Structure formats: C-alpha cells, structure tokens
Image (cartoon, rainbow, N blue to C red; front, side, top):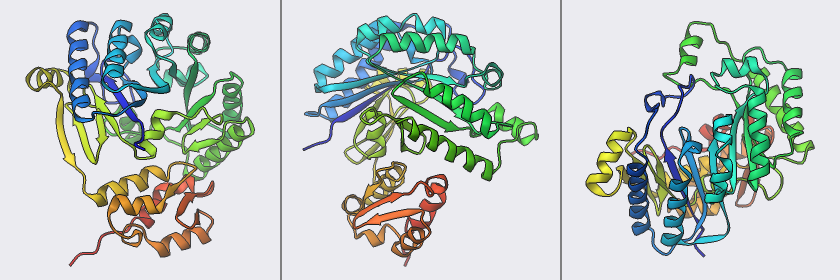
Length: 384
C-alpha cells in the first residue's frame, strides 16, 4: 500500500522583520490576494498532475505568516487538494501562526475553512527573552492567543527556544514546567542556533552574543527530555515531544522519508525519488507560474544512494529509528555499502546507538551528539 502523500504550502510574506531568519526581504504590507490564490492553485494543480491516484494524509501551511492568509484562500486550496487527491480519514491540516492578537482573531475563520491543527510560535514565556528574540508579542498576548487556539482548533502545538545566553537549568526547568501545565498535546523545543546572515550571527561574531557551551547545552537537553517524559509527552524526535498519538503526522512524513509535494515560493518537495524546489523570490515564483503553470526552479532525480543517505539522516532523528533493510532497498545496494558496520558496533558499545537486527536507533545518550554519529556511520563511497 502506498503511503499517504503530504502537501506543504509555503506562504512567504511576513508582516514584520525577524532577527534570526533571512526572509526579511519578504515583508509586505499589501498582497494581491486573488493573484496569489490563483497562482497557488496552479502550482497545486501541477503537482496533482504528476502524482495522480494518491491520497493526502496531511497538509501544512507554513512560511512567513501563513495565519494572515485569507481564510478564503485556505479554503480554496483545501477544496482543490481534496478534489485532486482525496483526503485520508482524519487528515491533519496544520497552520503555523504567530501568537498575536491580530492573528488570533482570525483563528475561528481559519478553523471554519478546514484547518484542524495550529502550531504557535510562542518561543519564550518571559518578556525579556521575547524582546531579545525580536518577537512582536509579549507573554500576555501570546498566552491569550494560545487560549484562543485551544478553544478553536482540535489540536494545538507551540514552540519554545532554549539554550539561550545566560539561561540556567533552574530557569529552564521553571519555564518548561509552566509550558507543560497548559495542557497542549505537542511541544517543539529547540536549542537556539545562529544562522548565517542574521543579526544573531553579527552579534555572535562581535562577542556580544554567547550561547551556552556544549556541557551546559547537553544538561539543558537532558533536562528537557526528563521533564517532558515525566509529563507524558516523551520526545519522539530530537526536538519534538507529544502525547502518544499526537505526533505531527506531517513532520513524520519528512522524517520517515515519505513523499511530500511542496508549493509556493521557496517550497521544497520529495516525490517519487525526485527533489523539487520552487523559486524562492515571490516575484520570480509568480512569473514562473504565469509562464509555466508552476513555480519549479529545480527538479532533480535523486540517485538511489542519495535517497538512502537522506532517509538515514532523517530517520535517525526519530526515537523509533530506522529500518536498515529499507535503507538498503532505497540505495539499491547492500547496507554495508551505505552504513559503516564497525562504526555502528563501536557506537552501540558506547551506548550511543542501539541495533536489533535490521532496526537501528539512537539512544537517549546518542541524541545530543547525533550529528557526530551520522558523520561516523554514513559510509563514504569507495573511489577507483
């Protein structure tokens, strides 16, 4: 049986600048909504023509500020997607939202349009940190938006950022315990990272922004997993925690290396062994859709080895781990040509990996150093 397809819809526009992303060129005060709706529908129709006979298990509206998409646009896209593919029973339809009062006022209309899950970017539960992160909302406004979301949507998740400068274990313990008390079914808890080309990178290079060292970051990571597990929301992925059955179905599609179509500026996709990327700049994407009926900039057939390595890199982020037989099938070669067996044995002896036949997973001790583990076990192809 074919796995359900996932659809990612990228809405690029932001309403305010953000200090830790590089989408600031996409800030817009006005958008021609009819033109954008028609372009997104055309992009969707192109993907549907390539992927006939599939059914959608999840749809995710992400990007800049998708909660400011007109509900009519959301409804039109959902209607077109259902007509093109059909929906699996209980389809998950998620929308990312900033926790502002302006956006919260639209939640009921978005739910009426068909959205049944929201992911809120709370990011912190104290005003000083929110100001540091460059967020426009304060704690009171954010929690009011969370309350509205919990009343309107069937499923609610929110994110927090930790491992911040000068953040102590007691501080994070108190903040995370408060977050867990709100009763949502899902939390995304990310360690603060510095992305190239952002204000944070400038501050870090100047010595004005210092993140916790590796030992403190590891302590914070361990505390995070212990608290969420004791609250009945264990980590099912490095940074994501959920009550059993409340995992993000859409993100599981990525991590389990299943097919997903991406539409809208900058959207990526993986479908039937082909990697797609839409044109990133909104104006260029619009022009491409008008010219070609789609916004694709790159469409690359992935070699079997590439697919296998991608599946390994993504799958080991999950607590459930990976099936090495499936990796070998994707790579069209024996697993020992793709993964370094002796390295796996060594890391298992160190308590960082756990292998049971064809099943391989990172342990709790291995998750904080997963990048290093992946660097060790992915076998470099032999050269002649």
